Amino acid sequence: MTSQLCLFLVSIFVFPIFYSVAFGQSDTTPFIKEFTVPPGSHPHDVAPAKNGSVWYTAQRLGELGILDPISGKSHHIGLGQGSAPHGVIVGPDGAPWITDGGLNAIVRVDPTTENVKVFRLPENTGNANLNTATFDHNGILWFTGQGGIYGSLDPNTGKMKVFEAPKGQGPYGICTTPDGQVYFVSLAGNFLAQVDLDTGNATVLNPPTVDQGARRVWSDSTGRLWITEWNAGSLGMYDPVTKKWKEWKLPGQNPQPYAIFVDDKDIVWISDFSSNAIVRFSPSLEEFQSFPFPSPDAKVRQLLGRTGEILGAESATDKIVIIRTTK
Image (cartoon, rainbow, N blue to C red; front, side):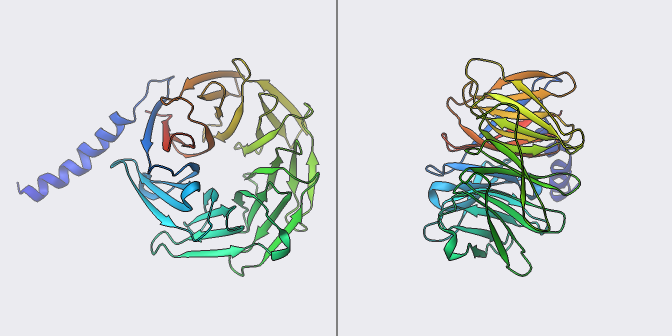
């Protein structure tokens, strides 16, 4: 047997075994692993890239990073003078799309050539303090700005629309449901809103708890909206079918739920600043389980994921965290 053939067999058989062991878990406890990124990155948001890699916004460096969890190495792409990227998602085109508060623009990075394309907000918008984005099922990108706006961008034409948000400042998390509806939450406005995709109008849906501080939102497979209530220390859920709300207080003293993601099994994952932990919530059992992050004071501000993995950005430690949820 040639040395080349031996190497090939090792690569296809041993490597998957190594990866499985490195990221393995028990039936109930997720395996948590941290990866250090360049100092001063202040990673804010993450998104799954191809081949198991992870995109992240290096907010303080004005760059987009990509982490290879196998080698542990990162590569950064500059986004331009004055950039301060906040959110990142992967679009239908396979490219990372960024909400850049420093540039007051939506930014697309070509994953192959690393070319950067900037879609600036209209000059009369002012400082939008851009936050998060999502694509609807028609390929339109919708985004939020804490400065009191939300808007849309047609990537094909470059046409952008900006709308004043109900109650002014505060638009934060945003998501798309399986049937293509777009919802966003307002941290300062304390509400969930559904966007009319034709007119752009936003319909306010108020949670039961006043001044709860709705921070981020994610949909499960049935279209229910799950919300982190930062001020109230609770998890909220709105069912568009029944038009009813439910809320659950997180465990511990003075919980501070920040980021949220619902995985492919409809399990809800939350980052809790107060306990410095990833919190798992089972909707069927209505039970929480809390798992501490390895690093103290991680401050995970955003979660995304893919099958078997939850991805998080530790903004205070210059680390990316990967949580394996399956064997």
